[in-house]
Image (spheres, rainbow, N blue to C red):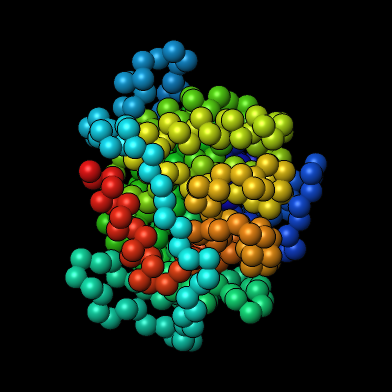
Length: 349
């Protein structure tokens, strides 16, 4: 995910959004990967002015922290979400190969009650040869977006193959993406499965960041699990790099709070250099969303199971001006339906 930053003429505003640069994967202990930060220039599409909610004061009552900044009030978490640690079933480590035709057609007869699956029609400004297993070998494609995509035609994007979307919601403890409210509503109206992600700041406490996310992201039983975006990013106003032990502690605090509130285990999104420094062999019971824009994730993250793979930050699609991040789900259509159905049922209990 790219950290979206307005030009330096506007001091003090640093935003995070998903992206990656094509090129070779780099893992360096002290240098940010070239793909860690995507484009930081202004996008082609107009960017709306931020409408940032007021930051939460430390010590504020937890009840008020859970009030959404823009949505209708939500009911208290269920007994299940308060008391149960929700495990996320991981798709099979071996993909089901579903080669797409040159002009793919959508699933013509979805099972009763199931979402329609559209085949990919995306293009890529910087196509990569991934070798034996490429993104086209996966049946369920999706996107991740933020304010940098501007106004999105979600219905058109859906028919181009966006079956799911992760939408930038928050970063740090006081910033709300100004397009989150609109994108959250319109993506669902267009029939996509959608979830929200948070760009984690290492100079803010994990608890206040979790409270800020909870305040701004509705607890929708139909939504995908929340995502914590963890990476080293030199464009962030929080440039410090903590020790591995401290990184893991902060992540755990944040993820525990989100799991208690939403009743779903969060997904961890990360990049190669951050993974090498902090996450190798860690959080084995958590689902991962991995960025790998030059090689298959099995090459970049040996032995790590994953649910989503972000394979491009230079995607092109009808319905979006400029570039967009492209992703795949690790499995086939049936696995996708099986994966999302139990979670929906769990969140409603």
